[in-house]
Amino acid sequence: MSVLGAEHTEASTRLARTPQALLKCEGLEKSFAGKRVVKSVSFEIYPGECLGVIGPNGAGKTTTLKMLLGLLSPDQGLITAFGGQMPGDALMIKSHLGVVSQFDTLDPDFSCVENLLVFGRYFGLPKETLKSRIPTLLEFAALTNKGQDKPQALSGGMKRRLSLARALINDPQLLVLDEPTTGLDPQARHLMWERLQQLVQRGKSILLTTHFMDEAERLCDRLVVLDQGEIIALGSPKALIAEHLEAHVVEAYGMALGESELQRLHPYAERVEKSGETVFFYANDVTALLQALQDYARLRIVHRPANLEDLFLKLTGRQMREGS
Image 1 (cartoon, helix red, strand yellow):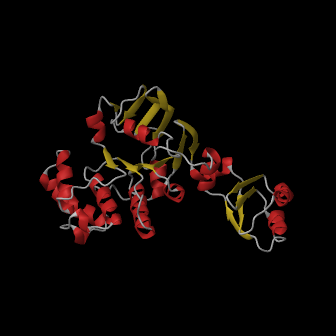
Image 2: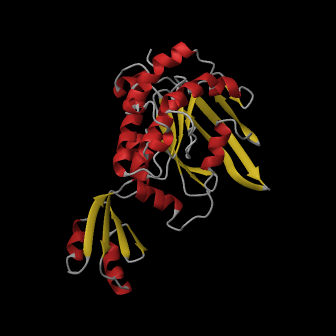
Image 3: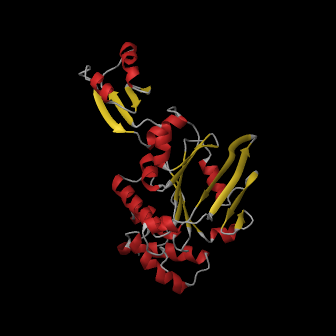
């Protein structure tokens, strides 16, 4: 089987999914200096699934990820994966994982090929196996012509794709990606999304943290929403949006709406929020609202369906958070 996984459709992957989770965490707890930063977190990830973990800064995402990777030991709770337990069976579990960290960890002194070769040797893979895998991985990362270049000669998007190729060198069943497209331009982000979608379609599983809601909505089968160390929502993006939000959002800006105007418009929406000079109207039927807004000629209007960013802001608030 190819290092990238067997070729099959996304639909067949879903049908083939079994109740046996690749990785499962139950009741994870972690405190630092007496402060609980992860509180009874439980979820699992299945074969052929992309599971997203989202939340504001300080929500506990990084700490949870470090416990799943064996970099931190939980104060309480259980992590099981591939028939073993973390951290006791960390080496065995890590042999089934591929990790792309948030920050660049490529060796600047090695070429792209050498970065893959040296990393593969950490897993005890024979040179012959690595030499057969590396051309396929470079092609997958769209770096075939960059094999002898060093990382400093690559663009940001190329470096991220090389990191992804490196994470695939051991043919992992589960990829753990920590904000994989942070700092990339739109073209590089879209190419990275395309590659991640291909991996899921080929049967790989992905655990993804991201601050980009469009990325989570596009890539993830299910989402874990963390806030202040707790899971506050879990489900598919579509199901969570339907459960927590009205169907339509109307954004009004370009002219200050006073309290009297807002009071007049309130009855046309289930929920109204103001952020700066923009007013957000949330409604299941916006026909009457759009008609009423026509009375304000200088008001600019955007009418769109509710999305994951709306869900995120409703569940976690609009205020800025400190920390990571």
